[in-house]
Image 1: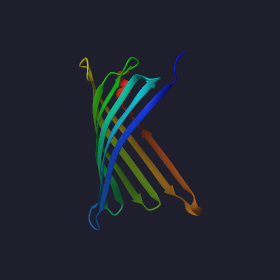
Image 2: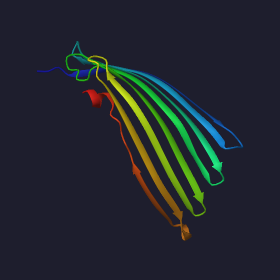
Image 3: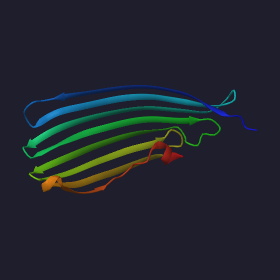
Image 4: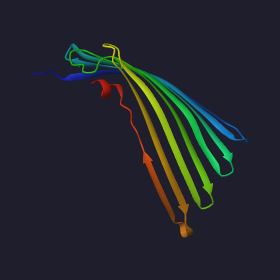
Length: 176
């Protein structure tokens, strides 16, 4: 008979976020966010240690909001994330690995009276590598969207949108 598995979990996390808003001019504000996380868990099978998981991660984001013309506004930004992951033990199925992801994004909105047009794009690239065996993988993704909102009389409206989204693989998905 197998013993029940108990998980000993520990996570430490620190997040900092700030924003600066400006009055006049094309640049309306700046937002910044930075966070670090240290996650660990151990699978205990009775008194015996089974698999240990560790995940150290940091992430930063900088976003600039703007209003270039009276009818044109939006945001642009940069996001960066680094990660180190390991699973050790007899039942570990993902090798120790690390990754770095860098993304840039842009969102624009054009206001034309009863009609408002929106476009957005996010381009990201990542490098994922196994710590053992020298295997590394690079991925690039581009997500885009466009939309239109039309305010009609009597509180009615019409909205159309289209988008294409790309999700890059995580370390666990890529190397398990």
